[in-house]
Length: 178
Image 1 (cartoon, rainbow, N blue to C red):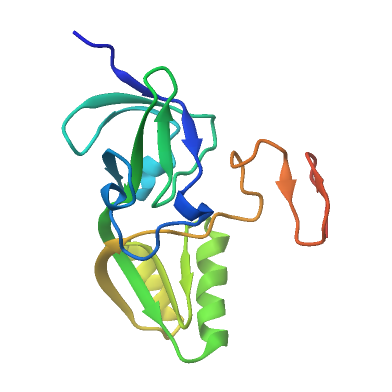
Image 2 (cartoon, one colour):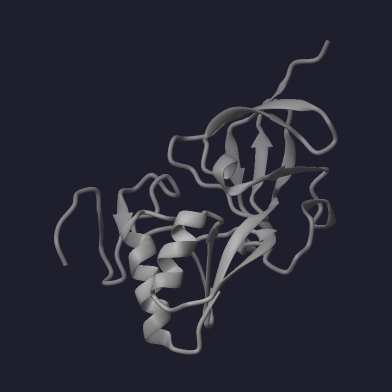
């Protein structure tokens, strides 16, 4: 019996960019695909099942968040798989008024809810309590099934192991007010 795959590295995406064009991982040259919802893409250690049915271990640095198009590598077997963001039920809020949309984003963020942001819209994992809160702000909430790629957050923990980054050009591993 062969040893279980152990994915311990995230290697560069093809072209260094997320696969946001709807391509599946097996179409960008990886021999395998791993389809995961957002909650599982936030977990750095777990037993997984690759889309071809094989079981494997995910053993990544704590705080790693996988994105659609990321490639995982088992260095002992030199095998890779491409991560595919699974379709999941989302709440979608559209607004022509950027202030109304900003208010919704503020209230969702204040509750530490992961939010995907687009031009004139927000999406978050479907939750009827949050839907009611957003509706009380005067916005219409609809439900859709789609991959979920929320914002990475201001500190991007686990992505580079070097503390956090700011837009004003310096890096360090401690907190302070701006």
